[in-house]
Length: 170
Image (cartoon, rainbow, N blue to C red; front, side, top):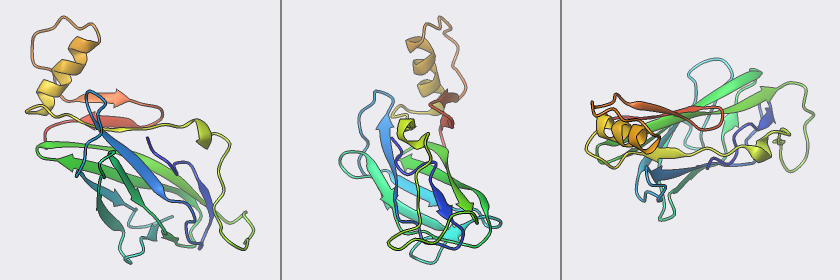
């Protein structure tokens, strides 16, 4: 699950809501100690994390959750695509979360962030294939959805909500 996707902030403000992903394996079980990288764009509408950098790496907890907080946004309005990558052993996957910076929001005491109406229905996962490689994970996904092919499948793109999650060997 991703919490904090689709938020709108005033350009130049600090994020008042965190961004959380749930890292699971292909069976839906939480993955503990996955390295999860959150990367902000280098130019345009962007910001920095509390470290002052555009990339923050955290570990997923026992329930598979990984979170970041307190991004300082720049003053350029527009869409901010946050690239999120999870890695555990030989498995790697990723997705993109989106925030929007706006000049139209007034400054408010106690925080700048607001939810968009569609945010409450969004759910996203980062799925890590725990098998030997992306082809094996892709083949398992194909077989579980009625595919009778016995040839190894290429890495699979799973569409979960708006983003595409890729399960592949690094």
